[in-house]
Image (cartoon, rainbow, N blue to C red; front, side, top):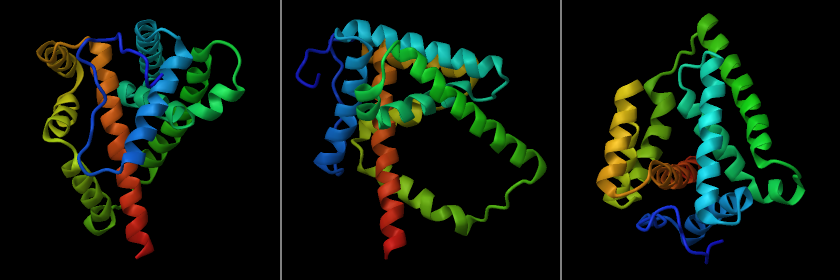
Length: 205
């Protein structure tokens, strides 16, 4: 899939962060490419299926009263991307059903977290979260400025305002909404992997 043409949008190309290792970039790109190939052998149709699954996930989390359905949908997709090689080898049937199964686990964890917050709010000091914030900032700085700006702008605002902002971003970039989501997903995956590596190295010191 890496060598196939990208039909989702003429201008759609993988984001290339500046200082992350080549291995990390390739793993992230290849995992998402394998996911799309699993959804459908033709890239454009794979993008349509991806979008359909994401909309269904958002609906699932919305009707179950979650206050951040888009983020939870993206979390479910992230988890599938993270183990796509295992999934593709052993799974038979409609790929969308696998996503919905992962969504159930995400929903279960979300509800446990919400109950914990409701009855026993965690006391997080600046010292406790500062290492994670420092690593996140460092990883964002490693991105090309246009990728960093896109990621920050994409997650600004809430509700209808956020939806309209994302449509405007896609329009300015000449992308379909689905192509924009996939591009942002790749950036998020790279930043997430970088942050985890950074925190692990700090603990090993």
